[in-house]
Length: 33
Length: 430
Image (cartoon, rainbow over all chains, first blue to last red; front, side, top):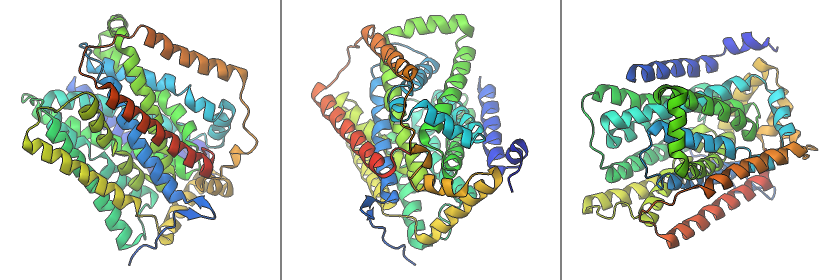
């Protein structure tokens, strides 16, 4: 059964893994400045 | 249990496995060639400007050859069928840009010889995500596991050996901890970038569509970093003006990069990230060939350095060979289809259309060959930018072997054309 667009995205682990890694990487980059 | 041998041809056509392997190897050639033009940048540009110049080249090059392969109508229809993947393509572009900027700090703080092996592990990170999130190598049997894992590890080790042999940069020591964190972080980010790749391709997306969105995020993020680190718009503008004589070389690098990257994306589509990414990481070998043969680098390398270079290269070739002969057995392909079914269920994709696209027979390709007049204008404008930059380009006075450059250019063009022909015959670039 198809879920609505955003609930499907926001409950997808494959969305959160890159988002978290990107957030950590950006944080590291800002700390290095 | 051993994996069944995969015939190179099925029903008179190249098998998907070998199509993917050929794409992975062609990616290595293209990405390796991308390093050559950047060696001609001898004026003192900041690493952020080098990055921005190359990424701008990638962005402009996207509108040359790729637009000829598939028109905008096709890309739009592909994106409309899978709109959620726009988010992942944007994420991938941002991950690339942040990782690339992290390498600048890693080199500054610990030197290339320490930083390179750390971020070079990105293919192993990708392999892990492929296994965990997309069922790659699940039920693959011991033989396929051994070949892929040992092959990927060999390519990392080989690349590290060649990197260590050729790195003379002294490491800084004040921020060593942060430098190591930056290098590990870059490897993690690049490895994680392959999650969006694989997600897009088990959903049947065309790499040309994915790369279109990817380049917008890549350019936007790189531009943001250049603005931050070059002191705002004014600083960036003066840095750009100073860089104008060498922008052509960076753009040329970007052009080679986008061709290599497209092959890497097709490899990720047809053999997965666990196999496709390590194969395309053989770009190290080609970058080395350009450096040694054309630019006369490492001429003063000692005996140990030469042994490391040769053994590193041989180890990489061995690793690529192991992966090339590690076709996913039927049992593993059942696991791939389970991952595909998850995407279809979650995002309401048509399972039959996705299955056809994943098998290289994209239904969208049928009857959508037309181009609009303005697409030719865009392609001409993109080409015009390259021509203009070439006209104002400065030819730096550095050692350059024209015969070897011509030979490597021919080999590169043949590999790209050969890979493209196989890909076209088997998948029509789908």
